Length: 302
Image (tube, rainbow, N blue to C red):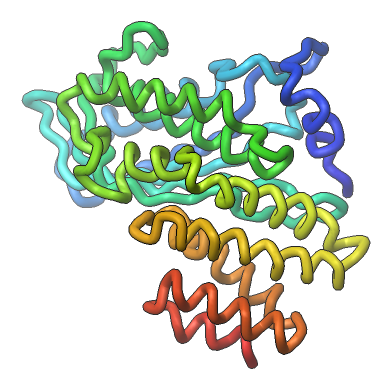
């Protein structure tokens, strides 16, 4: 079934127009694994799960209008590593996955996925989570707002060339505000895979080919697969040249590798049906970016 979001959102996303559609963009599911701190009463975890879900889903993050069936489906899976009821502190690991519908099919592709091992914050059951962009003083609020904008911005980049720029710039503003919070993950140069490092690299002008890749791969590749499978497969194979370009532009960046991590199985499935030349070139690019996955990339050539 063709997805209305793809046909309507593309001409609107630069206009931020007004329609009678709802404003909320996310359909987030939050799950919390607290088995490592099982001696603690579960009430605080139930409250956290409920309030995180409401915060992500009830807030209008942009002025772009989404129908209910067009909202971006995403999963926030939180593993609680430690919790203290003395100071209400949590140290957690977040596994975030956001999905995007593919035109002309019921297939959902992963549009973004990341593991954040520094998802730490304080929270009490009675806390009210409110987002004020001019005064971000709560790390849990900052974390969720940052990922909300990243999810939306990354999604828009797959639908229009550089379509998520304005939204991703808001995520950058939150990173800047995070510098004043006494929590890890926001600081420049601490870790190339932290929140600062990944977004800073992605938005760097020298990595523009990475953003072009996301558009070419999804709009000219996956979205054409139902009607023109061979041309779509070729478009995806050719889009990997942009991935290679991004890798060489900033070879210490983790952004190209992150893309290959959450697209790995999809890439193998699509490229295993490509031409011999396309397979060889795809293997060469992917191996150069992440040689540790050589066993997986070898499947492309079979």
